[in-house]
Length: 349
Picture 1 (tube, rainbow, N blue to C red):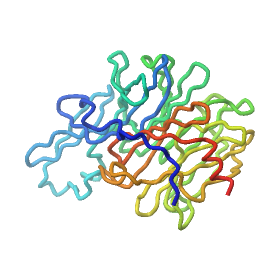
Picture 2 (spheres, rainbow, N blue to C red):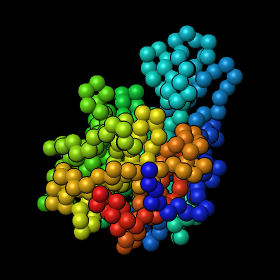
Picture 3 (tube, rainbow, N blue to C red):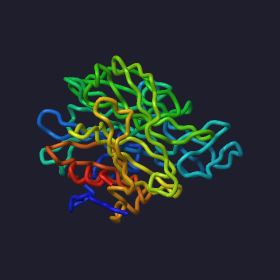
Picture 4 (tube, rainbow, N blue to C red):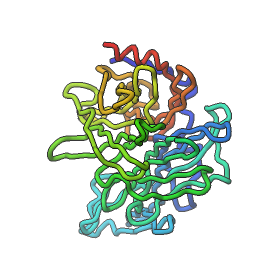
């Protein structure tokens, strides 16, 4: 396997201990997969912060968000026969599944791209309503004209879908609701229209027939999507043999739209690969990585809340350089850079 990433020497740049919990009865379990954007001449991350509740003796406590985006704690008696707590991540009580952690999105900014801090003027984003009661996760940020499009995973007992919020100032948000219904995630909107239409990558799941593949959709307004086409499937024996999904917004190059995506094996080892899509018709795949461009090699990528994981949904482009922020081992945030030309060269094969 190949790895052409240049990792920041002081990785990870963010760990759970670097941020405070959202409230006093919560504990930060891990940081994951930030969305990335530039705003007011600063670099910003929209980090997924996964939290759990402080546990009480004899009980299993799980958090959910209410309709106002506030945490409510549900307590289950460990001796209750209706409770199935065999999975540390998802429990089942009386026929209903609950997550042991819930996620929100935390805004942090940096002047230099490596040292990040919070600004009280820009509050966190929390789950709201019945379709976000188990949290919001893994936000991609696309800037089109003066609007920032935030596509993220909505999680609830009803399933996992894609939500959309838009903003211009990162203080006031317009909520568009669920734009791809369950089961769907990994939605990345292109940062410019193609032939007058918006385009987005997304990942519906079909466990009985089909699989976890990357699809393309188009829209007249960035909110209502259709004409779905499957453009990339899993490949037996390769790094993306079990599932794959889009990373951040595709990068426009002279040779095509370059999309960095994650692929996983049956053993849940996550690596990064690349797709090259036609500039005028992104449903046409020109080339695809035969080998990954980044694999888990460092201790903070191989050991954590869920090891052997590299996952990205955010980057900043500066000429030929991709400044990529990524989730490592489902616990830390790392920084790596790539040369666009170097990635394209791997696709020549």
